[in-house]
Length: 503
Image 1 (cartoon, one colour):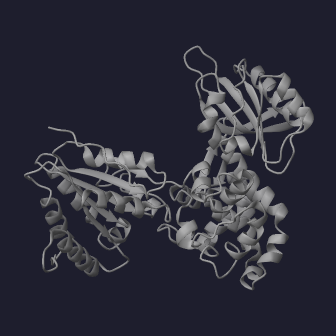
Image 2: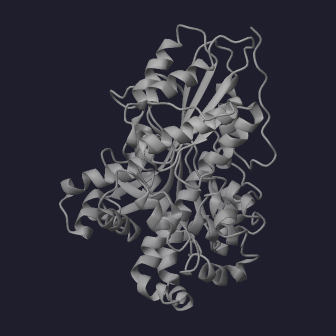
Image 3: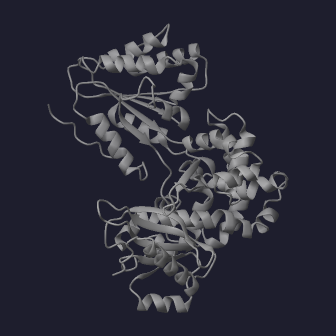
């Protein structure tokens, strides 16, 4: 049987090369059996845009579900399917059992081995009113694993907890999917290009700290209202994110309310506010909101499943971890907007923003910059390492003699195996608004010394200073003399000259 050729990505689909290739491979696999794929991702990520482009390329069937009753959804599905097949009258299905059976029947034995691509978007809406749908799809998928079928069914949805549950534990569809794709925000470099600010790293970094890599925010929400320079950033943020007349003003609230498993939004906002205020451990979060640690287990799990919160393990201390808000706009809302909500609603954006510089730097831009530096080491920064990449993370190194803890913002550690000791390849500190000097380098050197004393291999460990504000002359001089010291600023992070790797 001839393999279908790879589908080229349309020029109007920005980035998303890896996602397009995965979808193309799924659809084009030359197996005469039904195949199922799950596509998820938070709202505004461009899932529908991507899948519609795929359907248009193949001439497949796309159905976008809405919040409706079961009977209305069946009528909408029947009408859309009739339109796709060229039927002059809408199909009338009495039950979803009838509808799914008919749908799979369209992909049975055919004169051609071309696949039938079917996309059911916003699937959680249908599953809410017809919870039997996953079982019906399981039945047909199993049936057409034996009988010939060219069905390529993609179920897509934005409710992350619901979509994740489709393949979990004892769910009917567990073990049936050949594709599980999560459409994530653009990386910080791709986001800069998408917003047209890749030539202005200082502006790109601030923009990404507020709106992240969500595609919909530029065009659908702001109609291509983009700050033209760093000098225009303050005015831009006041007329867009902080203006009660802008769609972005209430977006952070809507993102939380849209998750199906979130009922008590006040509790979840409190948890997020705790993290935004710097309370990043489970105990710190519980203390901030006045609850016991055990009482916040469920909200933390739901926020993690919704991809709004990430738990990052301490790379140096087993069992220790910290939480980080993954959606920049939510972090910005909790740190800057929520405490001044009444003033912002009354039109005091300029005054609120003028008083928020310190809070923005400490609670928004600073933590975000640290995450960007780790992303850099996972991507282009890999070339700085003379050995295997290892695990990229952050952690705390305890200094008993000085009775202090050294926070390492960027660390690359290769786990030990067999008789080989764990190896530390890089220790880094990241500062958003501080010109870094020799004291920062000395702190990293002390951390390296302590880790060596704990039995870790630090023989090839480089020391990296990441700064958005620059470096002192003394530090630059030390880096010029010592090949093991790296200075990485915004120009390097956003694609400028990459420092030479430590030797």
